[in-house]
Length: 190
Image 1 (cartoon, rainbow, N blue to C red):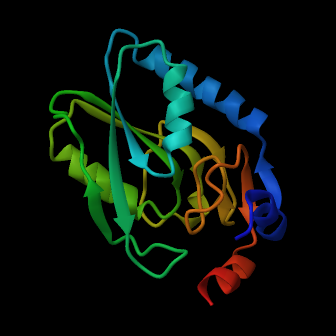
Image 2: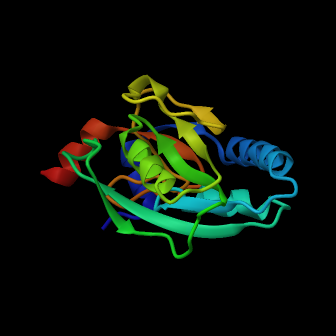
């Protein structure tokens, strides 16, 4: 079994966003949320597992009262891409009727999974829903998504690190890197 450094040397082509760039952007997003939600108590809904690092850093910089909850969704389809067909694996632990919601995602690409999630949450009658994502891969968007808080625009590459994974690996990298997806698929799936 390879250690993380060996995996990085073999599969990560380059660093796209450094740890310092990520932390600076998270601080900027936190400031905007603090301003926008002054006097309110939003429910932060983190979409597991990829958003774990982002939501952790983000919420520690918020100085507003908040509730934190989690949802887990599984996308169906040939890996490493998603068809947009989804299954809810973990639902909220609290009601959200009349509450202000901030959905926190690691990355939004086609928008299909997030569109499903927004419809699911709207049916519960929250007062508002806003979307916060660390990465926006808008070049792959299939459905329109309104993103209120965005970290970085990313090109059409497969990214890992800072919560994002490939086959449950690379999540714990402190930066976001570009994966050599062809090589990884060849090695991991064959």
